[in-house]
Image 1 (cartoon, rainbow, N blue to C red):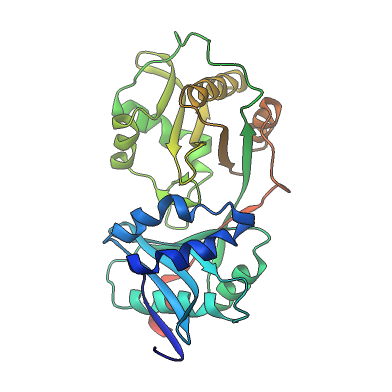
Image 2 (image 1 turned 180 degrees about the horizontal axis):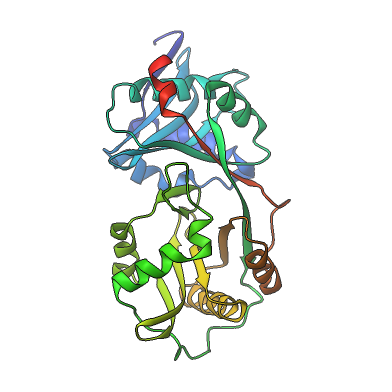
Length: 303
């Protein structure tokens, strides 16, 4: 048995230890069990663990969500290990790997506002808070069954949809430091592109209202790590009434797909937040609870 601290890739044989840590995370409601097989098969990521004296004490993942954009996620620590500093060690491991990669445009992660340990060590490493959003959820158990007709919806042309999205206030409020808009899919922020939009068209995850060649509102939806959650990645319309209509249609769609809950993150748009609150969306604990962090690329060279 290897002694001391060891960082290596997670393998299938490590799955029981991963699941044991996940079972003691977030009161047993961690999403890791839903996606661990996908992560183990993904060759476009680094899924690694940290062992101390032969025992797995922490793990995390670094993924290329585009050829030039890196996402850090899934950082977990065995709450019973008593080992300190494991999150910082894993993050430093990933950043050291990235020193050898050319043409990086972003290194990012998101976290909940009360994850103080993660926020502290990542800020020590140089990560900067770049966006503050509000995570909202709507439980659908009391929402009526999907019965309303959808005569006001249609499938727009890709280019028209792209233009509407890029000019929307919702999209512009997500612009990152490099002037790219972001689409949030659960706890991952994807740089927006027309190629990404094509995925929503292919998977029938776009709701558009208006008349042909005259878009009035668009909602982009996603399936995220929890199978019972319907996730809204973008919510944009010309007025409050149409925003409310998009939420209505999303709730209908979620019920049709047997989802139990809708979630989304809202940027700093007070009127959109009010519409969502009027519809029944709530925060878990407080406003402005969802934080996006970014690593300054000029710091990679001096790590």
